[in-house]
Image 1 (tube, rainbow, N blue to C red):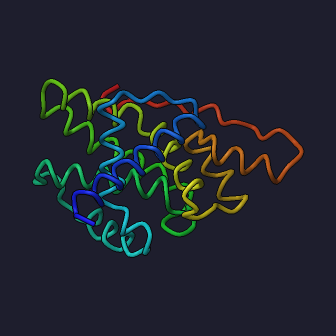
Image 2: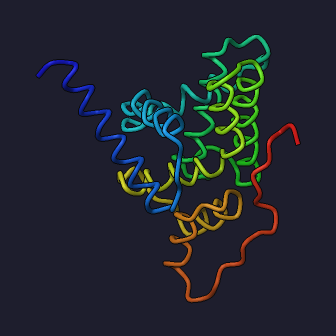
Length: 193
């Protein structure tokens, strides 16, 4: 098999996976955002499957001075935050009260990229910033569909409250006969608002 055949199959597999998650979540991503998420998942696929990526992500995010980051490094900060929020059980990386920090750090990185670019690139990163929690929910659906882990009932409830994740909500509903209470403050807002 040629490398190009493998890459094409990988693109097709991740495109199908992202589209299935969109159907489950009733999301409708534009083609550019869908492509971005497909290629992001391809970039990190091997790391997500062997679990070593968390150490690398933590090391990158621990840098005290992100002001001097290049566009690629800032993109990586946003992507790592998106992946951490989507794929790592809350208790594994941070207390629930700190999960919001990863959301804000990721959104801020994407916003910085949006403000330093123009045209379609600006539109892409503005969308990634503004819809960060929607993309977390989408990737949590990917996580569940790909068998990459499951949150405990308490983690599911906490993460649903932080992000509004429909996947986490479904997990909460699987453990209770009552109706979970949705938090009033779950809106997606840009850091510039």
